[in-house]
Length: 339
Image (cartoon, rainbow, N blue to C red; front, side, top):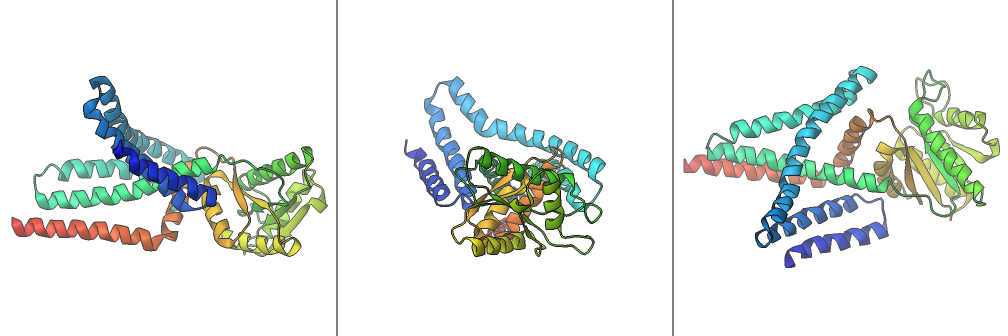
């Protein structure tokens, strides 16, 4: 049973960290390490288990992830083609397709060079696999925890519902992606009033871009008012240009009215966890909720969000990647010298 101690330790760390603040990326890492060490613990039991049960555990730990990786590759390529067809060939829209092709390219690379029987090439392949494994581990941690984070509910009353902007169509019209956020925000607003709570203010956040006729906050507010929200239930933050500024300027408005405010922030579901990390950094007192997004749009958007989170922690991540590359280079040099 000692084999399960590391998994139990990381599970406790996960629980303590989530209780302290749900908006930390380390929560995702603790969750991932819990499953990694749980898998290791299960494998130590295999020799003492009946063949059937032991085979099931081995399949769960090795076979299912392997088949899942191949299935993921096909899914990403198919989704990428859908994304290109519906949204165009911009670099952001090519992310899912590129990731799917990358999975099969990596499999081909490992099978081709890993079978040469050369210690030098083994070191190179090992380095590529470790590097890919590190990034993949972080991505799966991000994906799993983002899913869990997206299940949180609004508990108790809030004073503000902050609605993050995302650009306008034609310079003054709310696009479907932004309308989804506004509908979610209004649902929270209406539900709180319906249960007899205080009236939360809808704080629309977004400045005027160079190609926009009005500030995003103004267009969002007009959309809500046209849909039946009383004008005195709406406040505007119309200076921000980025998500960080959305949160920082909105916090200033809320704090100036009530230093003890409580809020929820609304964005699209693929952006919720990263926005939550930004909200924590900006000192916003509230969690982030996600609104629905078109299913075909979600994979590319999620990959883009992960890339941004990876880069936000670049010192640690680039340090780890550099260490893996250095280790592979040392092993390759040693193999060459011993040949």
